Amino acid sequence: MMGETKEIKIRLMSRDDIDVVVDVYGQVLTPDYLSFTELAEGSAASPHLVSNQAGEIIREQLLTKLKDTKYALFVATESEVLGFIVGALHKTEARHLECWIEDLGVRPDMQHQGIGAQLVGKVVEWGRNHSAKYFLLESGAKNEAAHRFFTHLGFHLFSHVFWRDP
Ligand SMILES: CC(C)(COP(=O)(O)OP(=O)(O)OC[C@H]1O[C@@H](n2cnc3c(N)ncnc32)[C@H](O)[C@@H]1OP(=O)(O)O)[C@@H](O)C(=O)NCCC(=O)NCCS
Image (cartoon, rainbow, N blue to C red; front, side, top):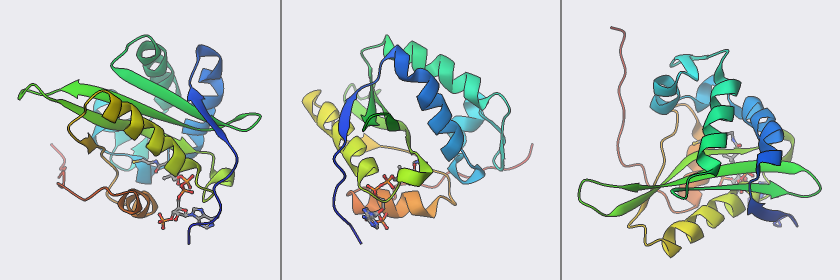
């Protein structure tokens, strides 16, 4: 059931937010969150195991992306940061722009209040303003709550990614 949307503000992330954002990321980064991106970047030791370096990896990524206009990083705040989202524009081989939601997290004690939907809405607005042809994200196969959430927001399952041991 969708309840009342909480009175929160969505604003651009700044360097000063990074510590709290890394903390929120650490709280939502469960094995269910993991997908091929986390494997590729080293944040996952395997499809089932979060890497010890995950916090430092996201910190470096956020610092880099804050300086790059291909990315839009937003935080949801009341008096403190409650959630974050990373949007990315990618120019495809067909030379159009697609917009990815690369990371998204809402503090577990603040979920189910519409904050995640507002963060996604902000990236969708940003992507539309930059003429993105469509929006994409990838999500761990077992992350069913996130799948329901994105379906609710108009996303459709598009492909499956398979993995095996060497
Ligand atoms: C996925 C995630 C970002 C959603 O954030 P959120 O702030 O809880 O999202 P919302 O509140 O906007 O909506 C979440 C669900 O709560 C429901 N909801 C919203 N307000 C509610 C309320 N007051 N009471 C009960 N349910 C409510 C929504 O309908 C939605 O349910 P549904 O998915 O079954 O349709 C959050 O759960 C999260 O951080 N998960 C861990 C990280 C993660 O998986 N990120 C995505 C990786 S791809």
